[in-house]
Image (cartoon, rainbow, N blue to C red; front, side, top):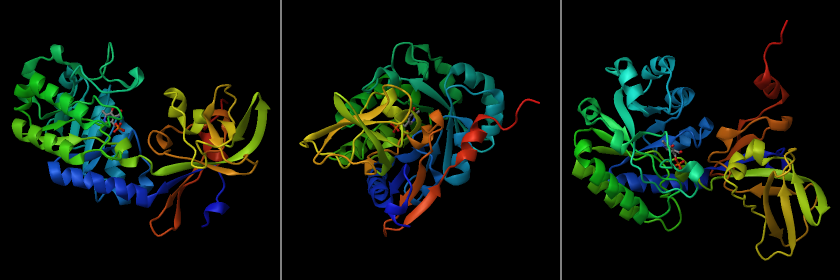
Length: 377
Ligand SMILES: Cc1ncc(COP(=O)(O)O)c(C=O)c1O
């Protein structure tokens, strides 16, 4: 398979880049004793799990189907968490998970009898402090429903609990800021944590970011785990998959209205939703900061404001030209949707030896089936 023969739009996951991130994860584990479970909410493209499995300890999830997917396709430890379980969910999930983490004391009290003897019991706590660039993604935002607020905890709960989960970071690239949160948790909750077997510190710790001081993070994690006598977990998503995949698109038209817009055969609303939700412009591999030719990279959806970014190129863009939208793995493929009946990007993996392997492709039948399978009689 040659890249130029592949029809756009498509995602290309780069094995070598993925392995480079995973090697950093391995180092963190070795230095700290922390266990790492992949957050499937960020990345669930199970076709490459065989590359990830040797490095991580298992998966964590946010809903019942992710639990099943992690159990079936990844193995190792399967952590199950949900903001709100139904009784049916709990019954299904308890059969296959190793750890069941409830979001509230209500849910824990209502369902613990369905889990005891089957999985380790956990509760999500909200430390009331966080590191997050945007309020939308801030677990400690006002009126947060994520985890038990620290001043609402019935401390008797710790007598019959195996572990707790905190998640309070979003793309935290600053190890000192993380360590401050860790110390805060130790001060606020320490005497309760001492009674537990495990503590998960959630995701959002960007230890694969260039220049991140993994040794410093590892030392802080080790100290925390020894102080409280717990097995520590992190739940990385973005850190594992960052900068490992491009969304490859083709310029299908160029229009002009004061500035030029290159329209590509993809849309943020359908294929790269977080560009829109978080208003974070995408990066294009072919762009050049000093380039003289500026374009809006516009999507082919009907939404007026749907664009990938505004950027510059050294040469004018041409219809038919391909562009690589970089860093398009985390929170992208898990959020793909069929808005506008656009063609869904295929998914490929470029192996370390240069070979291209197809992981998925989609057609009109997938679109049709996602809308109805039966019509009214
Ligand atoms: C509970 C929990 N764990 C892990 C993660 C993964 O975070 P990230 O992909 O930023 O590492 C999230 C992200 O929202 C989360 O809510």
